[in-house]
Length: 219
Image 1 (cartoon, helix red, strand yellow):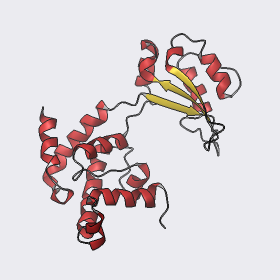
Image 2 (cartoon, rainbow, N blue to C red):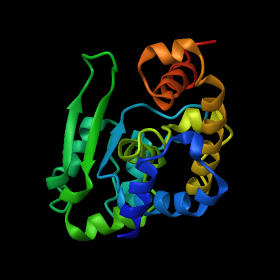
Image 3 (spheres, rainbow, N blue to C red):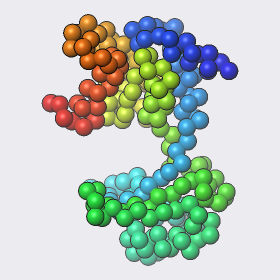
């Protein structure tokens, strides 16, 4: 398998070795993983839309989805009521769960759809629509696990801060992100603090990115 050969080569390399010759290989590996890693779980919360915009996984989005699936729901905009309605639908009932988080810090309830457990005709509708998205974040995690010294980690906020937003052409954006990670890694690799940490450069970079951009802990 060509991908295994590519990954084996990357596994023996470091981010500092990245070159333009790697571009097409990274494009292809990223896409292959991207299309292989399908999200099986979709979680709708009772968090309502704000400022007139429908949140992607809100109660309102779920009601809209039911309309698309030809299961028009006309009841209360209440997650428990919707769940009770879904439990009456034979094609959906095997693939749904209700999670009560009201007593936890999240203060939200959820309906969770497990796509693989839905009846085939409903599963096809889920997979053919825009709701089931593959995750560029999951791809970076897989690549990093397979070649931890070569492939950096990202998430949506990190990618945006690095001007590598992945809504379009995520494989190309990931290569640009790798180039930027290479540049930063080359700057910090000789710092004594980095050497004393015992962690890889990409691990340190990910911890910094997570603290600064994902969580906003660093000004």
